[in-house]
Length: 348
Image 1 (cartoon, rainbow, N blue to C red):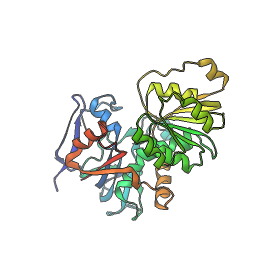
Image 2: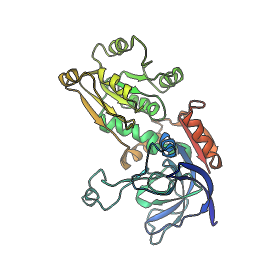
Image 3: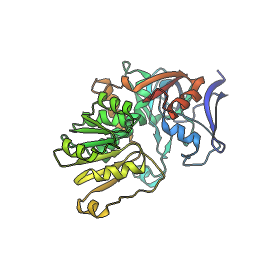
Image 4: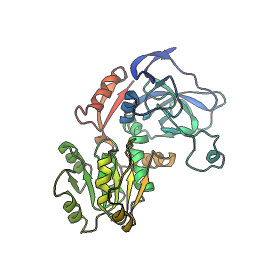
């Protein structure tokens, strides 16, 4: 076993290809993972089209930050609870271990790096992982579902329970019912939000939102939109509005739906400017805007427990499986919404 297939991106040119590369060798504190499943995310699409850049400039990178597999072999001096054959999901983020927050054991890390963005990820037959990024998964949790927990599920989960601080019976709006938003709907319901209102311009996405647990699914272009939100919330408006689309128009609309003291959480990423047209109303209402990015290791561990105990069913999230050799086709399908996928999974 000297070489393996890997989905490699030449960052300066945006050229992506699946090719044979050497199998990596784990160093101290690392393990070699035999990849069993790897999710395809819009972030991967944005890396390829150049709208997302690695934090630290790199020439080439193996994509893939949603990864699950089994430990194949251990690096030097590594033992303890980690043994070959252990089933694991890989945390998408990796702390630097050297910045001020890491030295003081405070979160978040000031120089955190993301797997498949800043260093080689899991669109490969084998991947290197630092031991502190391993999250054990039970035997009855399928690899494809475990793989998408870091990011596709953990990002909306952290946005809802941490940044949004959603409480039972609070009215919540979810803009965008795609890969993040669909899980946001499911998780907001799990957190006890009522009502959960989904907003998406696509009829198919609105139907999916209802299937994932939304109490109401609205078209943002509907002339009756604002009135519908007020009717559903007893005239109050939303306690928390989540933007999972990363679209400026979404943020303008979401801000106008907030009740007094309500907050808007920006989970969808965009380089576009953030504006609030009616700033006076926003200030009078004591509204807030909260930025959100990613999740912490504890969120992934919590979600694994929720999925393993049957509290969270992720099987409807898997829209299809493709072999690793067809990674470019998976990117094409996601970018062009072919079949309107939630998550496509690569299987080496």
